[in-house]
Length: 226
Image 1 (cartoon, rainbow, N blue to C red):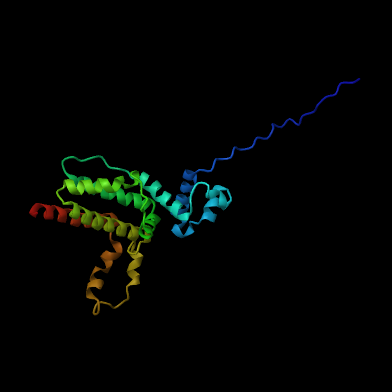
Image 2: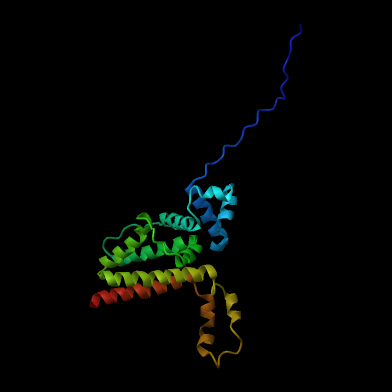
């Protein structure tokens, strides 16, 4: 009998790409990426499922519902908080550094501002609250009472949130905005007319420092006379 030979095509056998396991962290990362790219309104369970390549029902093995997912996004963002180097001799200086860290974090994830505003994050973890604790610690070490520290935290936080909202929306972000003011307003709105060029050309970094100076130096003055 003749020998039977087996022919091969010469091509390597195809290997399947291993499937990436679906986890809570992977779902959260996908939601955050989508929120950063397209805004909070784009985040839905069905859209996230498409982003990670599964059916929507598969998500519910890892997150309870959309509320749980959005809470996870907040936790994920707060884990990124870039704590500054400690400044032992002047808590107000450290507070200034913390304010810049908050601003930078929110600029990286601007839709988080809307998320914070719309949600009651009662299930916050210890880690997600560490930035708040650091800020309150600096304010208390500066000499504020617990009540005043809380008031200052809310006031400065509102300023930072408002600044980032203005930066990302850019209502006065460039000289083109000057054309939004009506012509011939000098008689009716003399102050708007006088300040219009500066409103249009205001440097956002300089504006942030100006506002932060007003609040922090105001705190120094309040503490000094307490």
